[in-house]
Length: 349
Image (cartoon, rainbow, N blue to C red; front, side):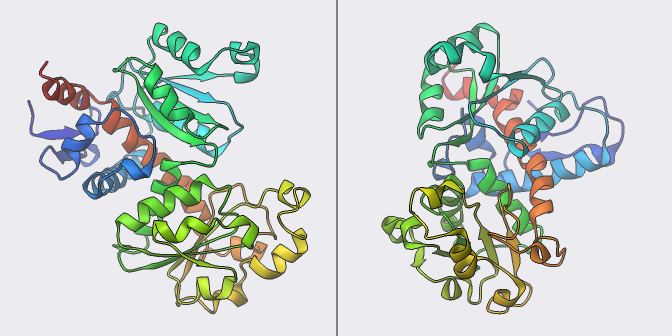
């Protein structure tokens, strides 16, 4: 076996496009034994660092090479989205196709799911189709774990969001976007602002960033911030100002309009007054602070138009670009022949 993990088309003659990772890179062995990506809580620091390093290479490859690679030729990736998505679904599709995989986009609205088909039944159907990986988004927390148990061992599951529980690749691309700005986030203060209670993005980010030594602060209306977050290592504030004071990065979360109808916030105007991020409030943060948002953004509600469109502050466009690179890296690490051969070795096969 070669001593490097190739991320390039083996037929490519351009050495600049041949991006390799040695097998002895910390984290590679752990990825080789991993079947699924369900939550950032499952990841070790070496796995995170390995993924970030590979994403850098994938981004360069995506930007400099137009033709699809062949590293995932003859692989089938299924997009199984029970909830609407633009960024995540499109990003995974582009990432899979860039690596040479075929992509099956399942239309849930016209599928047997609308006739009562269970996750287990859907899993059996996908296995029969010869699918190698399933990207799933579902409104129920734990749905990705349930799917992973129903599939045969050789099929990988990537959680693209399950209820309020987790959205691991969003947290990973947020981290990647920050690491493009500075070499490390260890010791940084990062504030997460908005509806924390209903945010799978917040949970995945807190889990991921705490592993890397980040000082995490959260703020939002008391009705939208869980009391238990301090047990996860986050400092909880009811006011925006102390949360963003001296912050290196601020992650704003989308406010769903139905929260007002549910009586969880007095009004949208009140939320804007107390928690909207603008240039004036950014003066409390560290010089050079950057703002992220998982999207879609309610312009003028979570963030002002001026701030969102400020290239010196906003990383929102960068996050979209980062998503393709990070998801290429995830797909490759889970689905490559290197992963499968290492699994066979680990299982004694």
